[in-house]
Image (cartoon, rainbow, N blue to C red):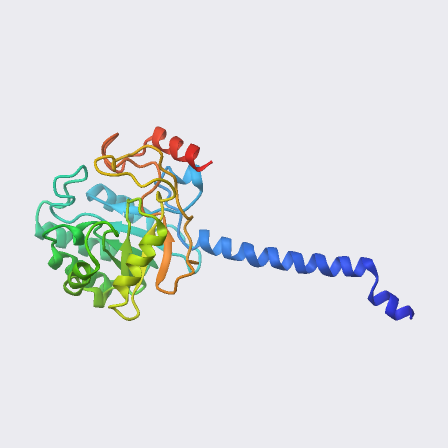
Length: 291
């Protein structure tokens, strides 16, 4: 009876319960850490100061190439990625706020080669040319060149060709364009970059596309799809925006590689300030809506 009593001593039982509780908490926190620390924090993004969440570094011009060189010198943690967006294609955004890009094809090819040399063997998630695939006359040959160049020169890169969002082009149109844009050389596609569509509709759209391409995955930009969906023309720096799901590789969908903040919260679309420029009023409103 003496040993039986000790085995069921309330103090010991309380200790065991406490150990189990700590283990569970550590298990949950492990996934939180993995979700947050698997992307290198962008030191050039001011939104990090507000949310302490990783967001993408956008390569948009020659100056950003210089910053990219500095970024890639950061000592990344094991199994973590640099999150990049290449947005330099000629006639970028057509006549929109972000219009520009390389003035010609030759310079585009030169820049892509330069980017691949900078990335080299750094683990990287690269989103290629947001919106381009969804324009009426996309430059598929240039996307193909970039995808093939990254696949050949960057052994640890994961390449995602941007494929617009559910309210833009239909799935059959995007599927046919992806075939010509080099999806066979890529790891998958990105969806909803800088847009506001709800995650559930993006998952349906992504599933509908990647089912045509075995073993390809998709990324959903959730940086500002946690609230209302603005309508045109109120889609540039709209009011009432909220962040969506925080960056994570735990998506609950086997086809979805990650939910990521591709568009850094607080960076202008071009209506308030120059595209990509941080606006304190925008970030303060997002923070207010998020709370």
